[in-house]
Image 1 (cartoon, rainbow, N blue to C red):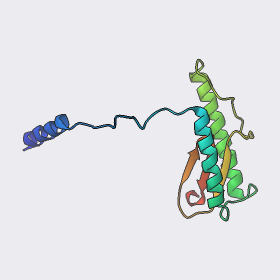
Image 2 (image 1 turned 90 degrees about the horizontal axis):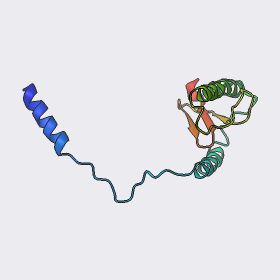
Image 3 (image 1 turned 180 degrees about the horizontal axis):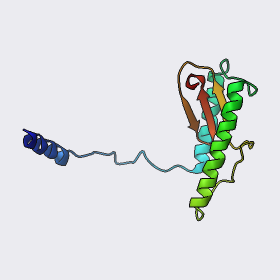
Image 4 (image 1 turned 90 degrees about the vertical axis):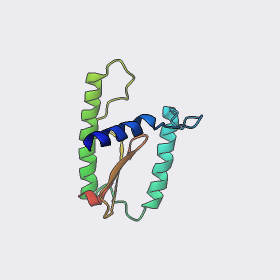
Length: 126
């Protein structure tokens, strides 16, 4: 029975073809285009969550800013040590404003980053 299953599975895999459209949807976009898109979406989300965004002085916002700054500094250090021949962004420090951190009051546990380094953290994670 196992041999029959394998034979059927192998036949299915080898006979299946992936049909892609003639024009690829996966074209690489410029970095500037991605930044503009991230900034537009950031502004849209600020409007959407305007009543639920915690102030920068809130304890959760301070924690996210501190932890996010430490993570970004460590990531920059790792990148500098391991990819010295590629173009890099300037290093960030835990107190720099290279990333924007927005904490949103929500029951949903989620966090995400938009292009151009806009970080959103929903309080359902806490």
